Image (cartoon, rainbow, N blue to C red):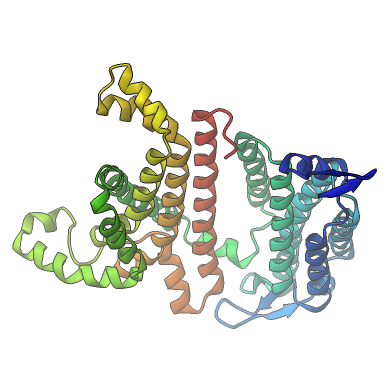
Amino acid sequence: MSLTDGSAVAETPETAAIQRRTGGAGANPLLMLIVAGMAAALASLGFVSVGPNRIVSGKPLALWSAVEPAFAVGLAMLILMLGLAALLRSGAWRDRLVSVVAALLLLASVATAGHAASLVAEASGPIARTSLGAAFWIIAAGSAFAFADAMGRMAPHPLAQVVVAAAMGGALAALAVSGALSDLSLAREFANRREAYGAEVLRHLALVGGALAGALPIGALLGVVALRRQAWRKPLFAVLNLIQTIPSIAIFGLLIGPLSTLSAWLPGLRSLGVGGIGAAPAIIALTLYGLLPTARGTFAGLAATPPAVIEAARGMGLDERQILWRVSIPLALPILIASLRLVVVQLVGLAVVAALIGAGGLGAFIFQGLGQTATDLILLGALSAIALALAADLALRSLGAALTPGASS
């Protein structure tokens, strides 16, 4: 409640949104805190880390010592601009300003790191390695968060979010193609494994696709069973919840014995690639992990159909199967797509662990990097998995927006 001219006015979500757009709020304290953290990191931490070779740990190098003054001043000015934007009153125009400055800061930090690596390569030779330092990660993470927060406040259409994300990805790709980043240790790890990288990405996608092929129909069926059989609902979801709590590496280990025995009894399965290690146990384990969110989403979506709508459909002469496909599923589509997003993002992350049992995928780079104490090789696998998850999330958001006009997500 707020008092204006002696009268009480109720504050609704709509009026709060209008106040945010018209300047009803002051500075953004969270963004100010982020900018302060960036400034502190820039002043006290290494922007890049320089080592004599791939094995020896590098020494942190401050931004002012790593690049030419113009680059350092430009990056500092963008941080200052972001801080000044945080002090402005709230409004849609401030969010646009923050999103533009944050995007430029993210791209500038990447370009500056690439420039630092080029200078190191010129001075120390091609064997020297330049890795991304703590200050870079703080600035990059802070600018990415500020950009995402500003975009979220503006609440653009999901298709617009995809366009913006594609533009950012295209700008980063243009930097990489131009050769501006080729001297970074992360880029060298990619260059050394270019052919293997493509194969592992495809293998990672195949693991996720195989798991989805099993989890979606089985999970959807379990969701329908939970809706139609109330007595089965609690034990069914209890079992699925129990599976979800088992560590992924434990499930992989538990599947080795049974699948090894089964392939020994049936040699035909071994010719198909089914064994104690490899893709088969990985897909089975990932399928098990995908059952709970799929079943929950299916149950919640179908249960949300108003009873009056179902009765009206029955009155029109539709049978139960027709009601399911013509009424319940179309109405449940936003929830079903949201659960699909959850399943896909979860499986993309869990598929990384499958490399431990010889299934391959992007996790292979992570575990190779751990064994070789090569941080940039670990980052190559981890950042690629994160990028796949984000791309899948944005694609499914767009699909949901296209299939359910007017939906906010």
